[in-house]
Image (cartoon, rainbow, N blue to C red; front, side):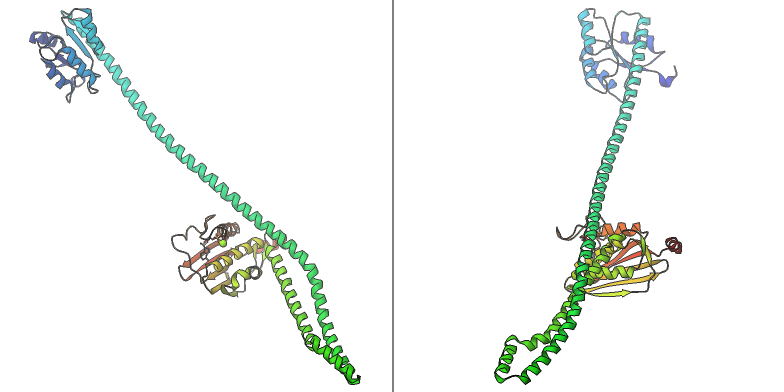
Length: 443
Ligand SMILES: Nc1ncnc2c1ncn2[C@@H]1O[C@H](COP(=O)(O)OP(=O)(O)OP(=O)(O)O)[C@@H](O)[C@H]1O
Ligand SMILES: [Mg+2]
C-alpha cells in the first residue's frame, strides 16, 4: 500500500509492553500513533488528523477505555471512527458493555496477531464502504437539494406565468367587452339616427313651406287690415285696432317667419348631428376601407364638441392628405378618445389643436392640448389597460390601450410628447395605402 494512503491506527494503552507488541504487529501495514492514557487519546482522536481506527485498552489510570469510548461516540467529529477494545477482561458483561458504548469489536488478550490484523482489516474495509456510502448519500442529498431549489424556482416562475396569463386574459376580456359595448352603442346610434332622419326630413320640408306661408299670411293680413280699416265704420275700426293691440298681432305677424326660421335652423342642426352620429358610428363600415381622415376628424369633433366647447377653443388644421385604408369606425373611436382626454386635461380654459399632415408614406394626425401634461413617472403606464388617474366612474383607463391596439392593428403607431404644466401632443401615424390596394378595390 503506498505511504500516502496508509491508514492510521491509534493505540491506547497504559502498558508500554502492550503497545510495543501491537506496534510490531501492525507497523508494516499502518501508520501508528500512540496514547498512554484516555485524555491524550481524546486529544489525538479529536485533533486535525484523526486516526482511521482506534485500538483501546479498558483498564487505565484516569479515564477508562469505556469513558473514552463514550466521549468519542458523543462527539459528531469522532463518532464515526471505528473503535476496538483490546482487553484482558473476560466477562461477557464487560464485553457487552464495550459494544453497547459503540465499539465495533472486542479482542480479548492474549490475542493471535493474525486474528487482530484480520479484524482490523475488516473494520477498515467496512469503514471505507461506510464512508463511500455516506459521501454518496451526501452527494445525492445535495443534488436533490439543488433539484428541489430548481423545482421551487420553476414552480414560482410557473405561478407567476399563470397569474400573468390570467391577468392578461382578464384584461383581454374587459377590452373585448368594452369594444363590444362601443360597437353596439354605434349600432344603436346608427339605428336611432336613421329613425330620426325620416321624420326630420318632412319636418324640415314643412317648416320651410311654412316660412313661405307665414310671409304670405303676413302680407295678406297687413293688406286686409289696411283695406278693412279704411272702409270700416269708426266703431268697427276701433274694435279691430283694440283686438290687434290686445293680441299683439303686428308683433306676432312679424315674429312668425323668424320663429319658423329658428325652428328650421334647429332642425338643420339636429339633422347635422344625426348625420355626424351616423358618420361617427359607421356601423355599416366596420371594415377596412379607403378613408378620408379629415372627414373622420370632422365628424368626431362634432360628436364630442360638447365635451370640448366649455373648456377649450378648438383649432382644426386639416391639411391636404391622401386617403388611408382603415376601419373608420375604429379610427373615429381613437380620435374621440384623444379629444376627450385632451379636454379632461385642461383646467380652466385652453386650446385643443388637431392637425392632419401628409408625410412620405403615412398620414400624421396630431391632437395637442394645453392641459396639465403627464408627469414623467406615469408616462410609461398610460397605455396600460385600466391605468387611469381619473376618479372612479369618470375613466375606465381603457381608452388609450384600446386606441394603441387599434393603431397597431392598422400597421401604424401612436406616440406622444408631454410637458407637465404645458400640455400634451398625441401623434398617430397611419400608412398611406399602397396603389395596389386601390387597384384591387376597383377590380
Ligand atoms: N391629453 C392628456 N393629458 C394628460 N393626461 C392624459 C392625457 N391623455 C391621457 N392621459 C392620462 O392617461 C390616462 C389613461 O388614459 P385613457 O384614455 O386610457 O383612460 P381614461 O381617460 O382615464 O379613461 P377612459 O377609459 O374613460 O378613456 C388618463 O387617466 C390620464 O391620466
Ligand atoms: Mg380616455
